[in-house]
Every structure is written in C-alpha cells, then in structure tokens.
Image 1 (spheres, rainbow, N blue to C red):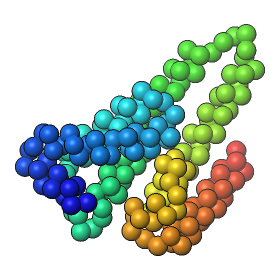
Image 2 (image 1 turned 180 degrees about the vertical axis):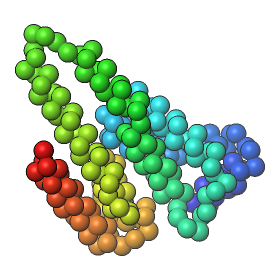
Image 3 (image 1 turned 90 degrees about the vertical axis):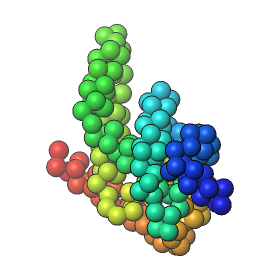
Length: 184
C-alpha cells in the first residue's frame, strides 16, 4: 500500500518506470477479470491495454481518500467493458463472426449457437442496467470470480452488504430477464 502510493506519486510526475511497475501490480488481475467477461484472449489483451492507458491518463484524478487504487482501476475496467459491449464495433464483429462461422452442413447447430449468443448478450444488457454498485458487485463476483470477502475489502463495505446487494442483483436480473422474455 505504501509502495503503491509512492508509485502513484512518481507516475503523476511522469516517471515511466514507476508507471510500468504500477501496471505490473494489477495487470494479471485485470486481464483475468476482462477475460472472464469477454471469453476472448485477444480482446481481453486489447481491453486491458486500453484500461491501463485510461488509468495512466487519468491518474491525476485519482483521489486516494475516496477509494483504494485497486478499486479505482477495477471501476475503470468495468466501465471500459460496458463501453465495449455498447459499442457499434462489438455488434458489427459479432454479426461478422456469425456469418464467417456459418456452416451450411450444420445449420441446426448454428441456430443453437446464435440463440446462446443472443441469450448471453441479453444477460449482459440486463447487467449493464443494474444501478449503483449492484452492477459492480455482480461483475466482480461472477466475471471477476472474487469471493464476498475480497469484494468487501475491495469496495470497503461490509461482507453482509456485499452479499445482500449481490443476491438482490441476481433477483433483479432474473426478474428483468423474465419480463423481457414475456414481452417477446
């Protein structure tokens, strides 16, 4: 923690080796977090790189007394992932991949695969609509594969609050998915 604070001060002053060291502290965790949400190693590498570019560009805005640096980096990561899924690029590449992977001999499998992709997109869209830190807690638990205890420490809230918000988010997601399937 003390080492981290010193590194942040050096990064703010423009020290590139401190920036590299600071990135190395969190790179693996952030990459795993992103990969667990995208399930694409190349995309996870690209997004992780974008995340750390954003971290370095906005490090002067980091306010240490409001949250831990790790929490701040995860928040940037979460926002980047949401931005990616909302982007036109994501929608375009998904369609292109479906067309490129289309095999006339196994069209029954394609229909099933497209249905799974649509369900996954629908779940991600519903998760993106969660408010407050319910979305963040859900993402950290499901995609980040963190324990309630780890999330509690990361967000600086009690473990019981984390559990309550997580299970509330699960109920809310289930309700929104049921409402959307009813509307179809």
